[in-house]
Length: 369
Length: 257
Image 1: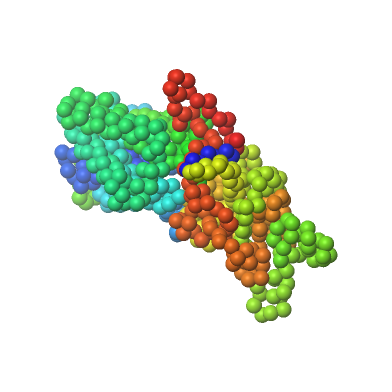
Image 2 (image 1 turned 90 degrees about the horizontal axis):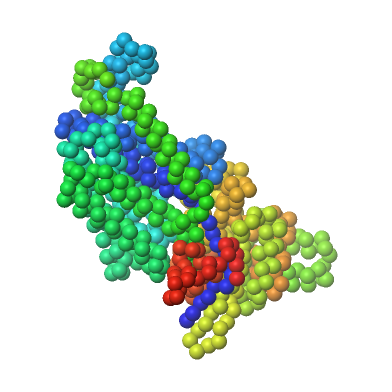
C-alpha cells in the first residue's frame, strides 16, 4: 500500500529553544550540586577542588535556568498562577515548587559555604569592604551550611525526577515516552556538568591533577550514558519494550535521524576515549565535547521530538527552526550565564571555600583574597 | 434533533425560525419539566463517505473563531491511497479536537486552565492559561496550538458559543456534503446516537485510550494513527539529494497540496 499526503497541516514547535536551554542548564546545575556535596557539605577534603568548581557551576547555571524557563512561557507575566492554581496531577506544577526551592537552597548553601571568606574580606581595609560586610551579613559562622547543602541535594534530586518525569509522561510523543529518558537526562546532566567543570578548570585553575580527576569522572559518566543508550536501542530493536520500539520506529526511517544517532554516538565515544587515554592533557577537548553532547541530547529530544508529527506524515520543521528568534534563546541564556560566572569569580572568594566545621564557629580562619 | 446543515435547512421548512434556533437545546427543554435536567454530551460523527475535501469547514472555523494565520482548529487532511491491485483513491479525513472523555491535555495543565465541561467539551480559559504549551505536547491528535495573538493555548471548542445559543458548530453548519454531524450522545433519539447504532464507527488513535467523542464512519485503519506515507510538506533537513546530485525541491511552508 502507498499513501501520499496531499493536504496536511504543519505544526510548529510549541516548546522553543528556551526550553532546551532550561532543561540543559537545570540538569547541569542539579548534577553539579550533587557533586559539590562530598567536598563542601560532607567534609571530604580530597574532593574540595572539584567541589568548588561544581558549586560554581551549580549556582551560575541554577540561576540562569529558571529565567530560560520563564522565557519559554508564552505568558511569562502570569507565572504567579503556578503558585496560586497548582494542579497536583501535573509534573510541571510540582516543578514550579521544586525549582525555586532548589535554586533558593543552592544559593543559600553557596552563601553559607563562602560566608567566612566574605566576612574576612569585609574586615580588611580596602575600598569595597562595606560590600563584603553586607554580603556576609556581619558574621562568619556557617555551621548551618551542612543541613542547607543536604536540603539542596534533596531538592536537586527532586528537580532531576520532575524534569525527567515531566517529559516522560507525554504519551503523545513516542520519543519522549520511554522509561529510560529520566535516567538519560540525569546521566547526560552529569556529563555536561563535568564538561563545564573541565573547561572552567582549564580557564581558572590549570591543575593537571584536578583535570585528570575530572576527566576520569567524565569517562565514568559517559560510560553510563553509553550503557543507557545501548540498552535503549537493545530494548527497541528486540521488541522487549513496546514504548522503546515505538520511539525508534517514529524516527528510524529518516536519514537525518540516522545521522543524529551517529553524531550522538561519536560525541560520547570520542571524549570517553580521550579522557581515559590522556586524562591530564585533554580537558579542553573532552570538556567542550561533553558540554556539546549534553546540549545536543536535549536539542534532539525536544526539538527533534516535536518535529515528529502525531498524526500526519513525514517530519515538521522543528528540528532546525529558521531565523534569529530561536537562536536568541540560546545566545541570550549563555550570555546571562557568562555574566553570572564573571560576577561569581569576581565577588566570591570561591578558591577558599571548604566544608563548615561542626558547631557555630567559623569553619576555618579566613584568609585574604 | 437535526445535526447537520442539510437537516437544519429541512427543519427550517417545517418549524418556525425561533424553534429551529433553539434546536440544540430542544432536549433540555423537553427535560425541563422533569426533576432531573437532561445534560447533553456533545459529540460528532463524521461520515467520511460524504466528505469531499472542500475545506469549507476549515474556512468556516477560521472565520467564526478568528483563528490566526498558519493555525487550524480543524482542517481536512487529504490522502491518495493506493492499495495492491487497486486504483488510487482520494481519502478525506477531517481533523479536530476529539473532546476526549479522558483527555491527556487536562491533567498536565499546571494551572488548571484547561478543563472538561459538564456537556463534554474540552475548553481553555485563556484568561488563566500561562502559555506553557504542555497541553499542546500532551494532545495525541495535534489538535492544540499556541495562538500567537493571545499567546495562550487554543483549540476547537465545538463552537461552544454557538451551541450555547442553540446553533450548530460552524464546521457542521457549513459542511457541504453533510459529512459532519453534531449532537447529543446522551440522547438515544438524537441523529448522532442513531448513526452510532446503525454504522460501524471508529476513532482516531484508539491505542491512546482517550475515549474520543469524534467518531468516523468509513475510516481506513491505515489512517487512524500517524499516517505512514509520503508527506505533503518536507522540510529541508529531510530532503535527500537526488541521484544526479540536485536536492528535491522543498514544498512551500504551511498547508499545501
